Image 1 (cartoon, rainbow, N blue to C red):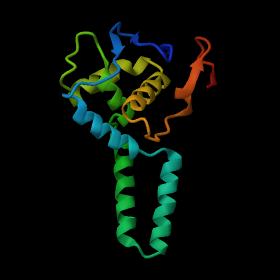
Image 2: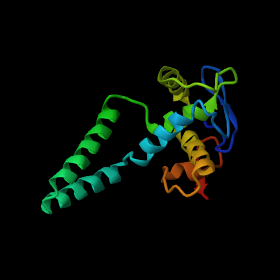
Image 3: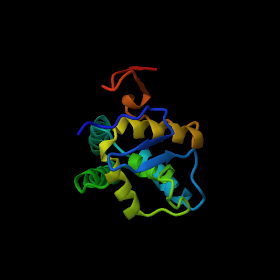
Image 4: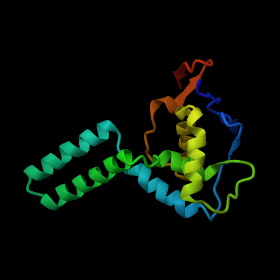
Length: 167
């Protein structure tokens, strides 16, 4: 099956299951505590280059005999890798579950189980769409936050093949 490639600026889309989702610009106060958790998780999430950087910093701290700092770094790295290996959803997709909702969804509450079902339903949709949604959403809430989403989230698709040019 081919990936569904919604326009990066679309305000709604349908999945392969036929379910429609709407991208809302905000979350309610009932979901705001989870928004705060997602932002912390995203800020401390690691890319491969970030992982390498953290390992190098831990090595340098060890050479400076700052063993408590090394332990904290290594503990955080272990937790990040454990999340990936256990198949837990990425914090960016968790963030998207807060404001990308079906028309019938109760937007006042949030649950991990419902979020996992939603992300599973999104499996046929291009990930760049969600990265872009998250980027735009975060900018509304946290204008000065310097989170670097994948560069694909800043591309504009020029055709159904997903080719694009950077903004």
